[in-house]
Image (cartoon, rainbow, N blue to C red; front, side):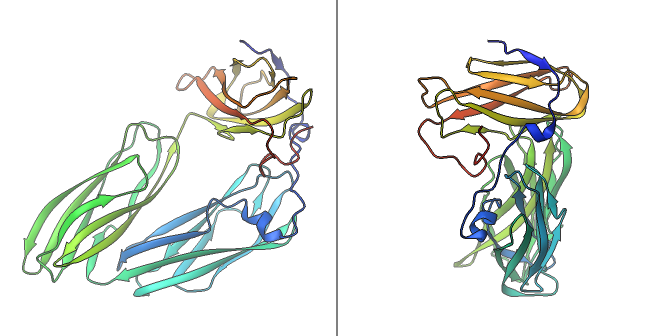
Amino acid sequence: MTLRTFLSLLPVCALLSCQPPVIANAQEWAQKMFDGTSHDFGAVVKGSAPEYVFEIENCYEEEVVIDYFRSSCGCTKLELDTQKLKTWEKAHLKAKFDTLGFSGQREATISIGISKPYRAEVKLHVRGNILTDIQVFPGKMDFGNVALGNTAPVVVTLTRRNNPNFKIKDIRSSYSHIGVSPVETGRDRNGVTYQLKAFLKEDVPAGLVQGELNVIGQDGNNEIRIAIPFYGKITSPLEISPSVLTLTDLVPGQEIKKRIVLKGDQPFRVKDVTCENKAFSVNASADERAVHFVEITYTVPESVASSEVSMNFLTDLKTQPNISLPIIITAGQTPTQADVGSSR
């Protein structure tokens, strides 16, 4: 079914009403914005540059202000790209493990202080084991910022010194969209050298590429694990946020309004929006712009059941004219933090 697309743009303040719940434990409220609170770098080599990015997303209406961020150990350096977050905006806190100045097992506690809308402090934890007799050059795999479908392979060299019996048994990664092929390029009494060629698969989705390749090696009778970090960002001509819309705590006859953000790599127009569920309507702008704020209204029917549907957006972008928004309708459940206060 084709939804009627109104050719007007509502004021941003009318599009979203998402207030943070009153929670006795302010730290619990703040922690909900983090995608994770710990990371283990594993065994990393001397001279490498392992990094990990903690993502922070403001899922509330009020602006979030990060007052400070600090590490308990000099082995972990921190970088934060922004300290003020409006609704649905994200910040990225990069933790950089210093393998040149430190050796052996190291760990750090990262403290992030939030001053607005409420005061809170979130604790993050990182740790790792810095090895001295294994070298990886360069120390990380950086795919860079590339357009979807245009990624090039990255090659690093792994050297195990003072042990000619070292062999790579396996290479694993929790990120399923990366592949790697190891080739032994040298072996003598001084050690062993491998060349590792990593590539992103054709089905890699747009977004942040981050993780570690865990090289499993056999060092005589001992198994050794070597973590090689990889990074990159796959950009898409057309992006949608949030990537999944969840509707919960439904009351028959209620109108639930949500704001969706469409972002293109160049100005574009929204030509049409379709959805199989007739309870949805859409209010969007007909103007040509790089960022569109689209209001979606869901009128809860008298008989509502849990279901999953897709809303499809058609634009005039030549590189990627279509994008879909999965919508999860959950009947009889309480709202998640991203939905608290967002219905009216």
